[in-house]
Image (cartoon, rainbow, N blue to C red; front, side, top):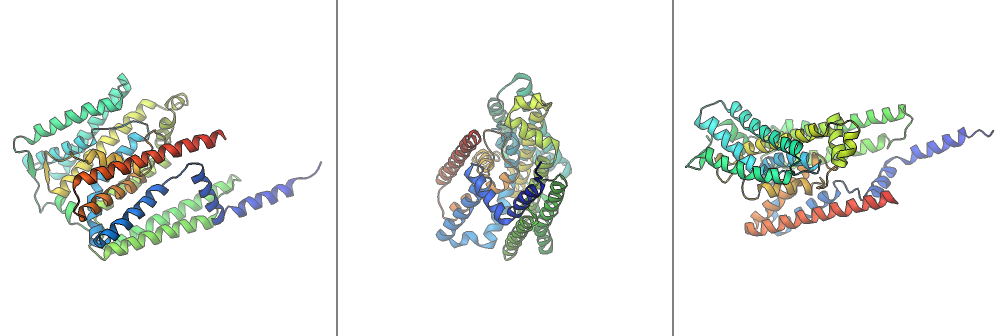
Amino acid sequence: MTDTRPTLDRADTRVRHDEGIAGAVRAFIDRVRSGDLGMLPVAVGLLLISAVFTVLNPVFLAPNNLVNLLFDAAAVGLIALGVVCVLLLGEIDLSIGSMSGLSSAITGVLWVQSGLPLPLAIVGAVLAGALVGLLYGFLRNRFEMPSFVATLAGLLALLGLQLYILGPTGSINLPFTSPLVRFGQLLIMPAWLSYILAVLPGAFLLYSGAQTIRRRAEANLSSAGMSVVIAKAALLTIALLVAVYYLELGRGVPWMFGVFVLFVMVLNYALTRTQWGRSMFAVGGNAEAARRSGINVQRIRLSAFVLCSSFAALGGVFAAARLASASQQAGTGDVNLNAIAAAVIGGTSLFGGRGSAWSALLGVLVIMAISNGLTLLNLSSSLRYMITGAVLAIAVIVDSLARRSRASHGRA
């Protein structure tokens, strides 16, 4: 019998040699061709939007204008983070705007009018969101009520409750000197802390990449190679350091945005490194198959709705801090559109089973960039609605085409 071991060793050596930076580039190109676009469309879109608005008005990329943009992005971003959870399951929550408005009203009533401590008022508002999410999950699990119908009814009910709580005055002003309002309008991270936080993601990527390579080597599996991990970590660190440096030319990095990014990182860890996160993707991909594999589908759905409404409530608290008031207009207008659009534009599929927490971050930056740029150009809000709607439609079309491409590639 011929000994084939040297041949296999040479083949294995070739595979491992090819899977360096050049191999990673080829793998990325193959994924794009197969329809797995990832964050590429939103990254390209953000660059194009920034270039267009900078040409039309150079103030757009001014450091302090970007700082204001980050302040505005935090509240909508938190709401979009909850939308990612329900979209991963192929569900929807149309009441997120009303929930955010109700939570701002609850915060104002409990804190300003009733005199409760601010932390208790915030906890009360978020708990109200969690209870609403529990109700949606119960209706979906117990009566198979479509989430579109349940949350549409919730939109009207929560809006009515918001108006009732605020009373005839219709608004509650929050103290300008309070920690909450200062957090939403003034508080900036120290420069040294911003630079340290900018280095940490790259360091974590380097550590986790090295651990992954070690585990795959122990299992006798090929990996991308340490050179690819180092390159990714270096590019990420350089990009974040440059961003922090540029923002420090103005006021700096807002604490409000930093807290939002922290929530993104926590949810990303939960989705990618826990059994709950794997179950979310499994249920979103095929609920029946997930059920047969032993996953408690009803519990996963319930958790998604609770998280969505809770994030919407917390986003309402952030919005109240930014505006220094809780009013009848809170949560109305384009809040629903912006939050859902941010999640979809960021790369979360409306069909379920695909997306990430980073979708909310990238998507909300696109939405806020469009809104900020049009405001600087003194254009009407009607045009902003039309442009945002067009961008959302393009994102859904790209998602549909990519989904079709992946399906055809899989059949091939």
